[in-house]
Length: 129
Image 1 (tube, one colour):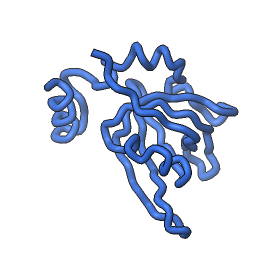
Image 2 (cartoon, helix red, strand yellow):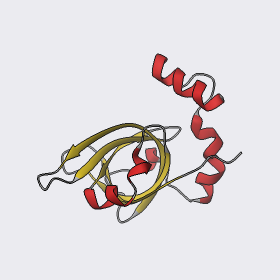
Image 3 (cartoon, one colour):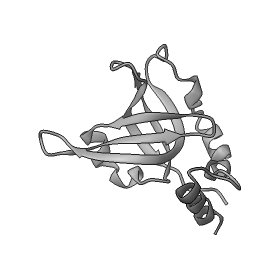
């Protein structure tokens, strides 16, 4: 399967060689009116929608014992770290697996000097055939 081949390329070589998995999602992402991640800056105000592939996740447990996620999300040109608080994670935990393609709405935060995306809602996309 082409998808499995791409995942192996990324796993073994650290990058996609023959294709990028997001190419088969471009029409859907266009319909979603997502903002390219490279266009997100400290001046991006209010709620914004991005789309991309989850390339890395780190799950932690808060002081109150609830899970939350830090996830790297990348589109064809850039990537951003996404912070997923427990209430958002618990609504849709299956969306946060590596190699899942998502559309997420949230806000941009740069409080600690690096740009982060605070996720308010997420929806996994299914590849169009």
